[in-house]
Image 1 (cartoon, rainbow, N blue to C red):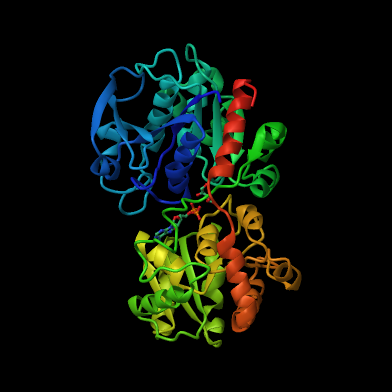
Image 2: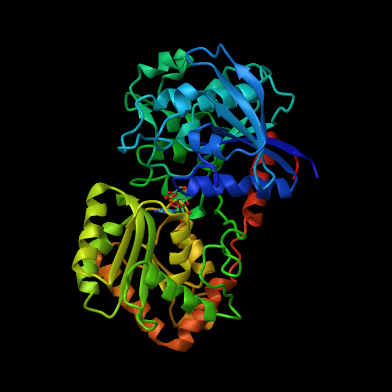
Length: 486
Ligand code: ADP
Ligand code: GLC
């Protein structure tokens, strides 16, 4: 099998730094690719969270004169899962208190164009004959807007290798005023409609899509949706015109990390054959979150960014009506202040029935997947989504909207799908409060039917969500771009 060398450039990688699913993918896909003989190395900025968690490491290169950028260096380390890591150490840009994209008050860092321009620039240098490293990739794999400029820099770099880009979320584009073009030393001719210009601004993501040899996104349905309004978010024309270069590859999940038989965050372990532990997790979750301890009441769970995309405003709106049913609700999330307040308000109004934790808590996210009975994920759009995979694996059937990766990974429960053993959750008939309310009621009816619920849970837990199939699909894309036979 031919070996391919790939530089995987990303702005987050689990377990070092995570705000969402991109980190999960960057933490797992490279390892799965390495298992099928693709030599992947991950390039990530040296945020404090990353620097603090690095194992043994050494500086392997420094860049003192990248036009427009402060000096920086590359640190080599190996992640716990064996994946080689290149950390882009630039204290001036990355060593600060806050998140990868925003300050502690939630405002975007004003110099994000520079911060992610540098990430893109270094990815491009490493993919050119100017690389100071012995290891040269055959291809640069970019992810989302933060690495979108790599293709532009590669387009003018000597001895440049091709690049592909994966869209994890088209709603985030990195659009900035055109004055940045000069500051980032991009080729002036790139600022055109056939280039990085988008409605008068410069767009990191548009650049990424325009200059990539191939574009992938994280589910087949989303690959189709983004070629049209409204989910193209202004880039549908470009994506449609490049239709033949757009491939949807469904994400997998880290099956060791997310395994109810071994999960270190759980009160008790369980499996399809031995389900008793799930009830223990429900009790532990009710205790931890101050909910009434009741094994029989259906417990709805949410783990999510609290943003318009995730559709949880609908759930918060119908919560008072839901509370007329025998049902409990637990929410873990953070995001838009209005939604956070609404969640807290509900907790105050329905103590013991609704619980919420506003913040980011890895352990609790596992405990909700395991302890809840039904998982709620009514996203307005969802490129792939990971929680619906986790919840299925934990025997907690999800309620999802019919979009993107949710549509590709959940089979609606009805008499036919229950009979043929494919049912694995519930799909909303419409993205409305009524649609969500009726679907929750429908799910509770099935929950009350022990036999049906048992077979639904069994279907969920028997599904294969490992990364292997996806990794093979990425390898195929790499080979195509490199013009090599499979
Ligand atoms: P997105 O990347 O759009 O936020 P995904 O479903 O792909 O959505 O991935 C979200 C990831 O982040 C999952 O691993 C989920 O468990 C995790 N997550 C989201 N919010 C929280 C939170 N508040 N605490 C812990 N984990 C969270
Ligand atoms: C994005 C998307 C999410 C996807 C994740 C990983 O954050 O919103 O749907 O699962 O990226 O690809």
